[in-house]
Length: 409
Image 1 (spheres, rainbow, N blue to C red):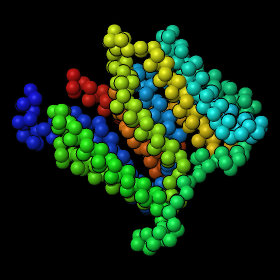
Image 2 (cartoon, rainbow, N blue to C red):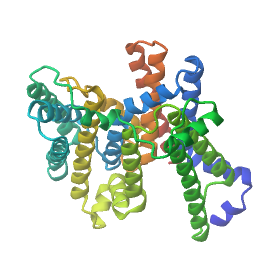
Image 3 (tube, rainbow, N blue to C red):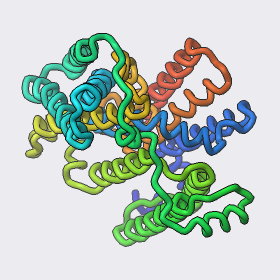
Image 4 (cartoon, helix red, strand yellow):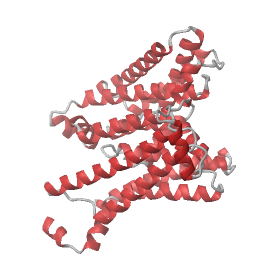
């Protein structure tokens, strides 16, 4: 069979590969098409430096929670409480910092631990008592929504100290001399260039290409089927151009937001765990077939429990970021955000049946949802139509997943 594949015509191999990886390439193409569409319809507003920065800031907490949601969905479960947990943690941070004067680092640590405890409480009933995650997290959504109202007594609480706000609204200082930035600005026709932001984009692009080449070499050594060279070049070219372009735009404004560093570190960490570790392989095994995984010696209950603990921690981090961005805690913070988070994971390639999905896909799915929200808002489309359009996009993603499965069966 392998020999037949190797001797097949190049065009046939490329078609077969594209058919088997249509979801990954389709998601990247969809993001590009949507961004080009809104760039045209908004008269260039979408990709302006200030709007790109706002786009990252507005969707940072969605991306952070989407990482945890993907883990939960891959394990074969769902978490409906993340929006309420995020709002509750933001309310707790406001009470600790604004009302009680607790030091910011201590308050943040307490909030993150609280998020882990919330995830543990829900994960315990799901993993060890086998209560459906839909029921447990639905109850959690109602409980923590009520606790937020009780904690804030139905009123907004703020503002936060400036030191707390920089979690979400701060920018990484450029360590390079101002003269270098001004010199580069003259070359690009800008007022100023943040050298750190531009250099970060170039280095990240080079690293992505190097890792891709390294993986191809390893695949060839071990006779692992590899991506057709034309697809490899095209995909990396698109990613490199997009990455350098975005970081250039950020460099021409205020540089790299603090929250972008947080998202980048978390994305790299979770991508490594899910793709390169035994724990990650076990997680996919549990989601693919829990009974078989258990018979093979995997501690399925513990993995499920830890998936929800992880989700609670990430929801707490998102709650801190959200509260810092708003500069206040409100009783309605996080309302219905769980729907955007779940949609990001499914649009990014996660399967409702579990065992399928990638971290990078969840991030791209979250960015796609963010671009849709941002672009429609700039165009002045009402919230009613925005909700309908997002719902149709989610439905299309699920239908596409089901169609691919039936085609391969």
